[in-house]
Length: 149
Image (cartoon, rainbow, N blue to C red; front, side, top):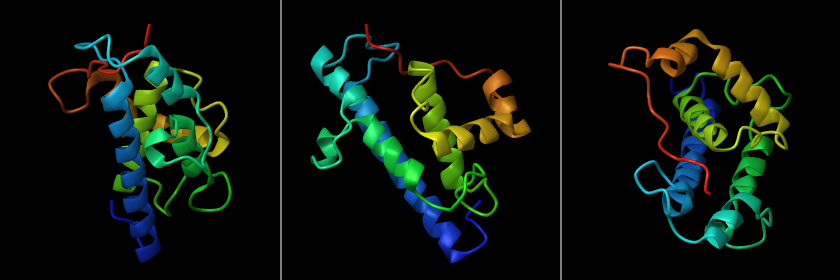
């Protein structure tokens, strides 16, 4: 889970940190099942539309984070960021991308490498089990973040 090399370990940790940045933005602006009206529509729109990487991190939209992730890591488009392809950072990335895809199914369209990663990881049996049934948990997970209305 930590990767087979120091480079893989560092990549895994960086993926986890980037995912935490995305989650922090979601918790601040994205409506949830328990709080369907959160912040302003303007803030929510900015979260999903701003692509300017030159502004401060707190003002960047999600697609800036996704573009940085798309450009990160191993060369090629084999759907992996580490040699194993299943480091803890990649697990966290899959969960984060799945959360975003539940809100907007087309969110990964502009990010080919992330799309390849997401599709590969989603096809893994352990991923399928968690998504389809909850795996070893008592039941299937419910969606928490929802699309803004």
